[in-house]
Length: 257
View 1 (cartoon, helix red, strand yellow):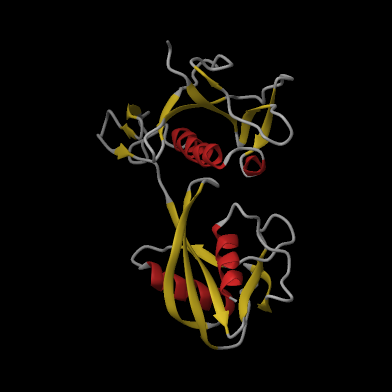
View 2 (cartoon, helix red, strand yellow; view 1 turned 90 degrees about the vertical axis):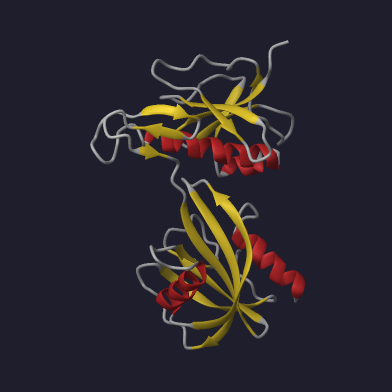
């Protein structure tokens, strides 16, 4: 019997799903892809953290077929079982890396795929692996309230937590302090690690922390944030969706209150 695989087929950020019953959908599961990859498209073997191997490839145009539908990767959280949503995230990151590593950044030579997660330049032997952009996100407590902010790049009207990318030479804790000071003008203390989450939009890792307010008045970084304030559990604004570590941090705080 031929081995079957889960197939993660993307057009840009749109993922191919079967039309299931009610709101439950799945990615294709078969020995062969439901559609023949286009000329020049590489089928990638993707090994998940639990050891399962899945297949992934990209298509140049959305697939128009009444047996299937294409859903944005973020939105697929609402349709897929959690394990398939997480697998889709890794598959998407591998395809993103493939698209952005076709040429050596050192000498410009077309690269060769050597392993599932490594390309090599045949001219200068430079090796390329999937890049992960690390960012922090922090829940800041002040007595019975938490700091919630609204960033210009948020999709929707919700408020979230202070977040930002790690810079070269920083520890994660230094990044937390810097981002909070830059974006809000506040000092914090008691920084504690909470959890981390792959964030495939397009290729990141969110590292979550908690901290306590230590002083200062809120002075928002205008080019990053449009609003921000301390909120109690009785007057919370619209919160992030449950797919994010931001929401898990907020829900954890609510459970402690």
